Image (spheres, rainbow, N blue to C red):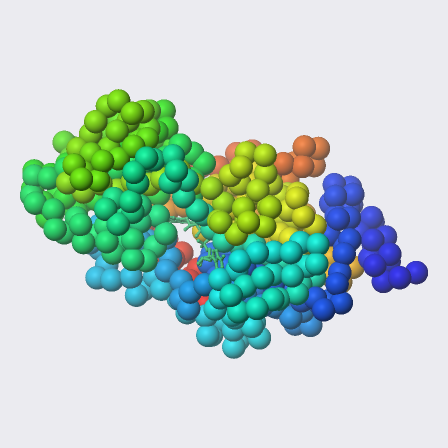
Length: 421
Ligand SMILES: Cc1cc2nc3c(=O)[nH]c(=O)nc-3n(C[C@H](O)[C@H](O)[C@H](O)COP(=O)(O)OP(=O)(O)OC[C@H]3O[C@@H](n4cnc5c(N)ncnc54)[C@H](O)[C@@H]3O)c2cc1C
């Protein structure tokens, strides 16, 4: 009996839903890639997947491929835009400690393709064979849906870094009494409460620094997508007359010269600073590698180990994946990475896979000192195989509070240390 056949039989004994769906994972292994896992993307999902793979089985060679030599966290970047942080240094991590502490090979390169059949990741620094591949490339923008869009004039600041700095500079340069326009795409997008936190932080900045200014919010969604009651309460308490929230307003075109946006090609709105958050899709490499599903946007995965529905031995986690009821958040990506790594190690060692159980908490600041949160626990429904929220587990904080802000600050410090060491 070959090793692969023995592993196959062990998986069959692993308990109903997991076992029967676990078979594709041990289908193919090329020799060059044996016991090698290549992780694409050094953000919230990729760093944790690489680390947990090595922690759970040091005999596996793990290569983490990331285009940049550092990573800037989107979580808390809204606070920088609101003027609560002098720069982005406290939100920036490097990879040297993570690599040294866990023996992860970190390669700074652009991933240009994945040969799923040959089990090879293609990059600007050469080819990397794998037994398993984890893909966590975040998001790309569907800018083709906004005619004329130019992120140097109307920044999105939805990938933290130079875009975030540009938006803050534009706010600082705006004259008092000016108008900020912020547009929100239809869900699903990265971080459901993120735009509403940003509105709060911009409103706070305007109140303190630009008297007489306002922010017009053009939300493509029919209503506030997350923590509605708490956001409305906070806006009433702190930003009366500053926030003009308009639901069901989808921006489809921009005029960069006249600093105007067009809603459904008809209604015009003018701004001094315009923050367009475009509609989104899985990271570009997920499209190139054929991991995207029928919707042409996101990657369907098997729910308990995040293996791609399109290609065996490639696992997609984080924002790019369709993870059922789990929101596209850094916390989710972190949870998914742990479940995915645990089950990859199990598969590579012919052990039983673990049932998926994941957590998400998203904090949002409403003012300099107060925050709110939403929390949920997620499991795989045994009959539908979909990731669902455990009934009764999803809830929001009771009120805006300084305690929630303390929790939030502790969360960001901890998770960035977890990702970088
Ligand atoms: C303003 C804002 C606030 C947010 N606040 C929160 C919050 O409070 N809490 C929370 O949980 N989440 C929050 N989020 C969401 C969170 O940032 C994302 O959900 C999270 O980053 C997703 O992780 P990921 O691993 O999928 O992608 P990312 O963290 O974006 O990582 C992707 C990495 O892949 C790399 N990459 C992509 N393609 C390639 C390639 N071809 N070659 C090499 N490298 C590549 C990128 O450079 C990047 O480093 C927020 C987001 C925004 C925009």
